[in-house]
Image 1 (cartoon, one colour):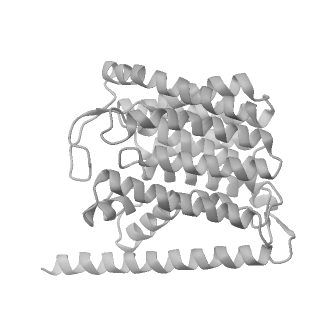
Image 2: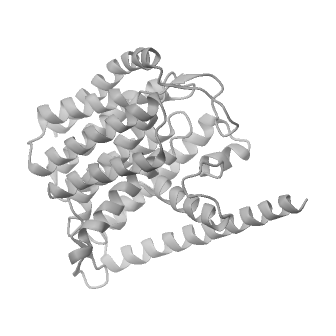
Image 3: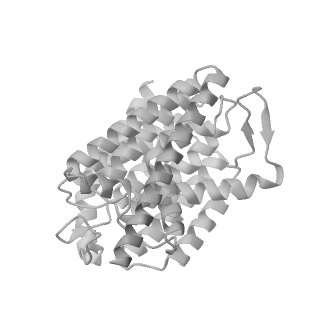
Length: 346
């Protein structure tokens, strides 16, 4: 356990100490987020290169403390490419098409290194469902999807950093409990780097993680969860990271459905995300972030529970949670469409 604690603390300290330098670099290269529309919650120009400190903390600690198997090397190379894309976008926004292409290339590097979702576990008979030829596209979809899910919730000070840290620590605990020491170590290093950045990012934020950080964190979480929890024979293994990342996963799914229902481009930004809705209810930024931290913690606890319980009980629990989330999401989407139509008719 000492090695895990040291890795976590080392990454945390490196990230915390380097973030002020990231602020200076952001000002120097013009990586500043200037609020230009009412979708932005912040009111003053803020540097957005904080993810660079998280990247350096993650890389330095991993290279120093984790055995460099081919899968780990693939994740590090892919993470480096993702970080470069994020830096370029934070300095001067690049098109969604090129960002997506870069994410696909980074995911392909990781898949080539051996990180793949090869099967789903069957919770009803404890068997395995092999994916065969669908393994590569399923892994690609998972990595790109989670990468962008974290990016989409990065809308309030400290939100993405805190939710990602909770997910990382929860997944690390589950991985360690299932004998996946290296996976747990990587997740704790990521959690340390993210938490080291959080004091600079919590409201009022001195710096944003930007795409540099949000894409990096999502990418690493996606890759490591594939290599660890999803590859295990744990009951309903694929549901565990989905629950741990429940806030960004469900928020992203509802955002896509909402835009399709309202016939808007999927990549078009809006103010329909969960954190926007909580702000509309009168909560402050800090209150909204703390509420979403609490929800993430509950979902993480649920993931721990189903990872160590009877398969049938776990399956029913997950199905019930998903059903409730879908019903609520359908209600919100339908209500939103109705409201939009009413406004159009006025």
